[in-house]
Length: 312
Image (tube, rainbow, N blue to C red; front, side, top):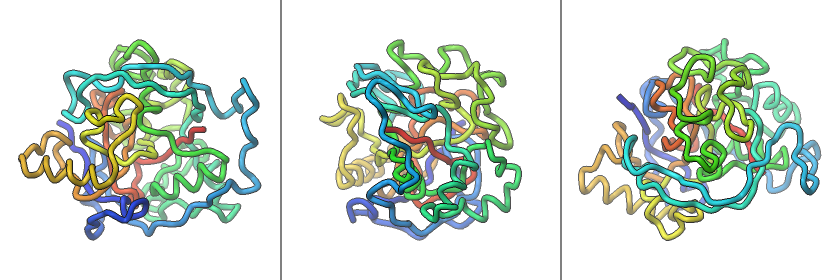
């Protein structure tokens, strides 16, 4: 069974069109389609428009920095024609330009450098306190909001990845079901159905087609895009472009009016513009790690199973 998608976010941050609701009470909201953990609402912080002086240098032509791997541009198949939830349908061709993607999820140690520079705020104190075994320097940082994640990536001279870019990095040109291929998840490939995330890069057998670690399992990752349940039927689908916030709100209203609850999972259909999250997490079951799985949360959420990796 998939427990997924509590609903509320930051269209109000970007476009001023949210119908925001009060934050959910602690210890009641699920993250993703499987597994329950308490969200920690947070205020939205501002993001720098330019990288700080400590940001990574610009990438030389034809080369990638040591912490990033190039993903070639091209056309790939995004989504699926059957299986999963209805928002994963249909399979369709998407064409993207080449880009760089972090080799691993951002670690606690890397995040602490941004905090020390007084650019990023610390991870949620509630997450850090309730989950002390999540604070290892090489474990992925969690307990960060969408705006926190965007701020960090900008400080590094990077940005958040788009949902289509993430799926491109997972699926390559062969339409694989998981980052490593079509074989089902195993403990030596990734972290799932577990109590906590593990150090990034500790499951090399689960690497994606271009060499990225932990694209499936360990922790969810914030995407740049607002979540659009109708994204795959929009005019911009071929470029991986979701609808605008007003279009997203209209789609969610339509789904509610038609009582199509299952379209977006078992949690209530969102009532505001949320952000997409991708990749699955340590508390997820094996089936939920599929490459096409689309999940979303309010951008203010700072929860134990949600982190980030950056793109450029």
